[in-house]
Image (tube, rainbow over all chains, first blue to last red; front, top):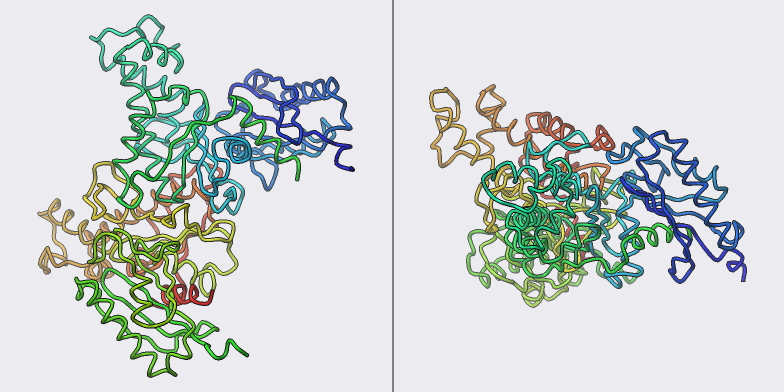
Length: 320
Length: 320
């Protein structure tokens, strides 16, 4: 009966754009949730203050702090072992941030954190498309590209807690400049911002060709604009997704050679593109696999509601 | 006392060139060993016959079959779960070969097999450079390039037993043709045969330049010839290793992003090139890592005698 004294946990998903937090019960129900804008707080202390106050407010309205066992956080470059966020390219705070310590001091309950994509992988394994799988790879396609690798039924953290940075595998030698300091990283092509970059390049390279996307200021085109144009039949927009799917498929083929997963689970805004992305992706993946792997690897879309996978996965960390 | 009735096992390392087998005791001593030429037996049944007879002969001279608990095999594309060798590009037998079954019928003891590089990784973890490590990646640089990935202290087999084919990660899109059917695989550049290909290309591209390697028939240059020429100060030979090290370093940087290993352990003929390979490798790896990984990943050479790592690792499978 003792656990009923603290029947809930808090899950937090920190993304480059939004920070979503929710109260979760032991059955995986998100009882209440809210969010703040990550980029609105370039000063770390102000961010911790705003996030902590938002969480405390949500907790107060949902039974009080005595019901909360702990907080689990999914964030880019978050280190499970140290509780730090380390050199995250898509977050406003640079260097090594002692995130678990700061948030725990603010809210007054224990805080555990991991890579945001690792958290999504845990969520997908417990509640989503990867239920029952012992070997799969979660790929999150958001502002950046994240990954969580599960092998032998366990998340791979690596010797230092930093494993699973597949968004920074180099897919085009000397390719696009990445926030991480290298060139040609996967996420410079297959993130939402990567799709927008491809749109700008392709519209400039095919200057004589009509496109619905030309109605939008070149610097303001988003992946959502490209999706809408592709759904309306726009040739350039469809080619943008074909290119994105091809690069992602080539990369996934290389990842297969590492851990031979039963499936990839795709999550995030770009996954909504469905077959526009999936058809070229599957072809490129298959073209780049050896015989022993061909036709054996599933590519699935997340079965979780948008924010829930990461929030639920992150929350699961807080039970231990 | 019962285990003393069968105090030994047999380990077999099947390579594209040689098949080495040895009798191993529980302390990891190789009591006796021998080998046959793999390529001399293009017909599978003749190979099994020759290998089986070689093993039975060695066993007869070392205490008899009643002392042998079982046989462990390391081979390219060997599947731990099924006991099959599947579509191995560098072996003479095509398709799916029921290797464990055939050899067990021939010799009369149980046979377990795994990827040759997985076997080397087990050997290195138990007896070599990776003692005490929970996260490392074994890279074997032989006729081909193999790999064994250890994470959370366990070998990663993948959902189907085929994980760890990092020699076929594509490092140059539309690059050199590989035996696996794809182009630009790591092993077409950083295997012994890859080094010989680089030598031929570089000697042709720098036709006006003197080199010790020009004394050798272009089609007959081996990686050993390149090593000898480099040690003698030959500029082209040194550049061949610089190129090989750079490509391997770039690839290892991408592998770090997957499982964040404490170390890579290099094994095989090319590892003997030492600093000729290691210096450009370390520079390229570091140049292609994000800040969070820079300077943290060790690159070690195997501490096992040449054949022993694979034979010992393979033999360890036979105890279970």
